[in-house]
Amino acid sequence: MMMQSTRYKALLRSLFASVMQSELSASDLRLLAEELRRGRLGDELAYMVEEAASHFQDPIRETSSDLRALERLVKDKRLTKAAIQNIITSIDARSTAQEAATMRQILQEFLLSSSPRQLEKFKDIITSSGNTDPYLKGISERDK
Image (tube, rainbow, N blue to C red):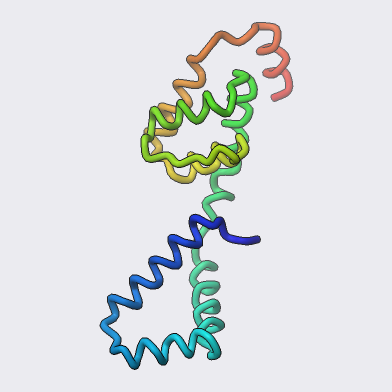
């Protein structure tokens, strides 16, 4: 699975900034560049990152049940992608959902970046938006 272009670019800038802050000399920088091109530095760094990643819980797995619950709530309320993006933007102006993103991706990104308070506000807004048809509500609750 490939990393998203925006995350990749942010990571690349962060790595570059770390190298520049290390106060390496110009000759050390040239040797580093050579090592990056032809050496084993990439493999060793990849090993270190994989080892570190094994000690962290994947936030997507933690939020999968929350994501399913939000998806069901949005589906039950028949909210559009634009409506969801507007709600998220009203809660968190820093939100950067892309137009090409699916509803699931938008909700997942919000879950990963929101605070518990923002998530509760989001749920409150969704549950208060529009009245659900009692017949459809009965059917959806029967499936639970």
